[in-house]
Length: 241
Image (cartoon, rainbow, N blue to C red; front, side, top):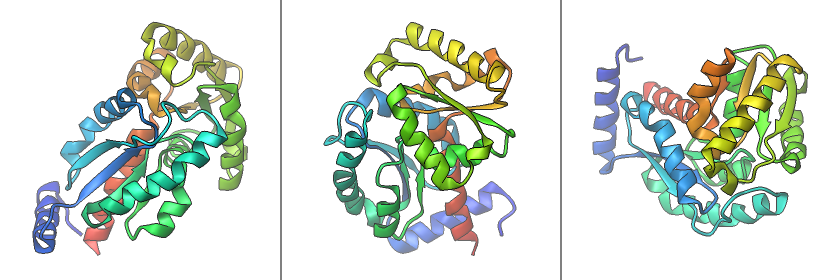
């Protein structure tokens, strides 16, 4: 295994050149909001220096402006699979950048590359940072989906609570309103539900992780960052074998 980043990057560069292409980690936003994708791109920017391969954030033009219902989740699976199939030969890994992890298992079946969902990655990351995690959802309607997912992962006993901002994806663009609700809901999760780590339960909240962590004094996980870090790690593990 390589002990320093320079040798690690050199090895991956050699591998990529041998393949005749530069492999890429694709972070796919399954909704059609470029504003959300731009926020994801800014969130993962600090990780590019640590990544041996490029990280590219992409928008699924066929998706709805925001993924807020089970119908939205189900509806983006087929176009996302098609989108990712076209990228397969150039991909080191895929990140599904929606907190419902739409099509995660189907994409894992389809692709030979590592596929990381931001919800799964954020929950796994949060459990390394605290004993009880709280999820900040966009809407009350999101919570049943999250509960099913946490239950399927077998970690319901580590969930403190899941509470909503009651803001849709488009409304998250209002920074003043979003920040006020993040503070209120985050404080409730910390003080009433006794969460010792929080998860931002939507890719549209990427800009607030650092500020919220500083304000509340407990760790806050931004799922796109958590999943991208995991994807970088998977690429490293593959290259080290």
